Image (cartoon, rainbow, N blue to C red):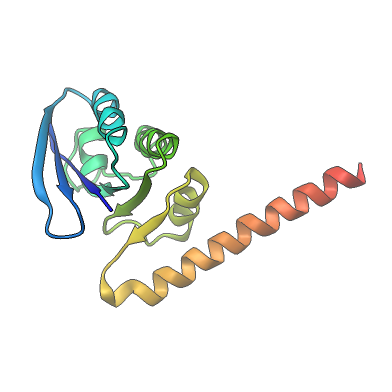
Length: 156
């Protein structure tokens, strides 16, 4: 399995590759915005990448041009749009996606990630059980809502 790590910086996007062992630097993209990096990521996914890891904090900082501070907001529409674009690009190429970051423990955000098609969430060992429970709860909620929606559409 080939892994692609995406490290968003203020002016660059660092890409690293791994075939299951320690990741090695692959490419540095010098871009003015994350959108410009999506096309590059798409090309790399076409080259048999199986798994992409998104660093949520760095993506948020680059997208909003802030450091973790008072304006940091992973729920910002621009951040959500970037996550959606990356996940959709990867899905078109059968590439799994995962997100890592300190801010992903909010149930509402976990639900948004699941709705967008994220395959997994990377968290610290101390948070595994709690995060796993939140993911399961979000998945049950989404499935139940879908079943209800289908049931009500048949009743009309």
